[in-house]
Image (cartoon, rainbow, N blue to C red; front, side, top):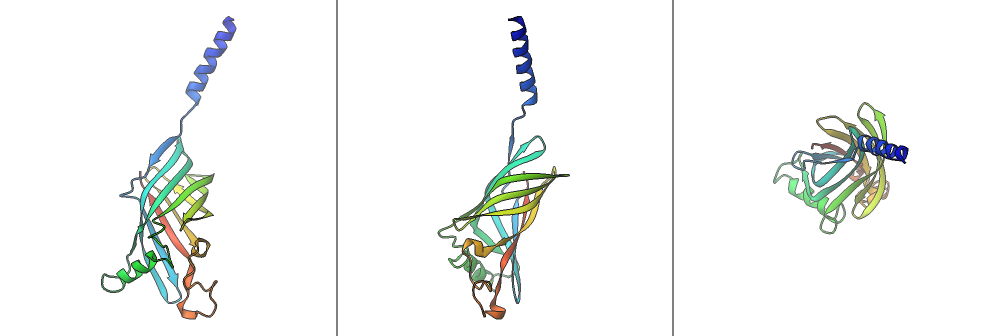
Amino acid sequence: MKNLKTIAIALVAVFSTVTVAAQNKKINVEKSNIAWVGKKVTGAHNGTINFNSGTLVFDGKKLKGGSFEVDMNSITVLDLEAGKGKEKLEGHLKADDFFGVAKHSTAKLEFKKIADQGNGTYTITADLTIKNITQPITFELAVTDERVRTTFMVDRTKYGIEYKSSSIFSGIGDAAISDDFELTVTLFF
């Protein structure tokens, strides 16, 4: 009986020192940002989108999870000036033939698989939901003590955004808009 008590005490001591709870770190939505670039045959446009919320999960310094919600109503265009096409393009991006923000005011990203590549770099496989359509996406993510950063491409046609897509509509020539748009995401805690 004495040995059983000793073993039980030892196990409790081991588990209490070895078990490290996952730490959730909420992102600072005011400092964190998403920069986008969309290209067309005759040029490109760029802008930003804001976060509603986001959390990264760490076990010590190792990334273990994450989920984010983006405010699609916050889409802004930075390369055009007010009165010179800015409002028109922002309105078009928010319209049904692009992101349809009246019906789909948020987009979401949830990490599903995380592969540690070493030196603070991870390969992330996540579910990205845009316009209530969820598709898997894979990207590289760099984590430092100061920030988390990634750049990746999204194929808009996978989310039902087909406006002026040359892969959907043949013969549109110079009016074609690239199916892929680029997102550069910078997260601060």
